[in-house]
Image (tube, rainbow, N blue to C red; front, side, top):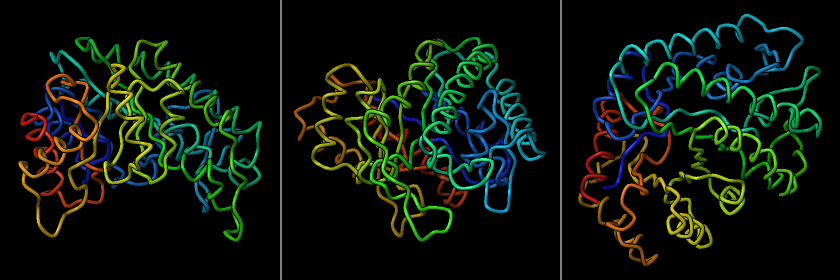
Length: 326
């Protein structure tokens, strides 16, 4: 049977309510919710820096910046993550099965965090290498913490979020001035940094997925870097990407398809219509839903932070219904 899960972010500020939603509606693969509506320390970059080990950061007017010592906002981000995991641990007592957590990827982190003297980490070869390795080390510690808290979980998926990867390899990330663009990162280096983080997840006993809902994400690079799960907005996949996803499924990896709108649609699609769309996609690739089974996951197209509370809850339930239909 296909599974359903969330991309990660949800709308609102009540963390306990978010955890209860994913545990109740996504029983096959619940996830650690992210609520960026609570402020910058709970956003993707702040959350990622809370996991990074051995590097300090602070929040500046221009955004997050690496520093000699952790500032109050960096300490707050770490404290908030620990409190959130306390809530997950409490509400998931007795839970057994699979569970998913998310962490920002090395290239998205390098494209959103500044060096101590300004401009993005992305602009400095040594700095981006150091940040990626610190993230890989932090992920190991993070997984050990999750395993201790979720002792009944026998399958721990860690989704690496890389929405900026496409822009990084295409040389489309703006410089600090906004007038220029950072040079593109060559593909071997892009792959190597991703491999460090995905390898750390595997070594710690986790199952590494990579998610992006950005167009032109280099999925063949992601697959080659060791991702055992590929998670994307189905609308953003080109012909070559479809081959990569088909090959992943045939090789026993997971494909998580974003097919449920992540913001309130003008007219809500029915579960039957979405199910038919996924079936058509599988048929086009020559894949049988029954053979693919639980290696196919259904998700919203992206995070649900921009949805209304009503639609966020409905999107989660709709994902679960489509998975059951399949």
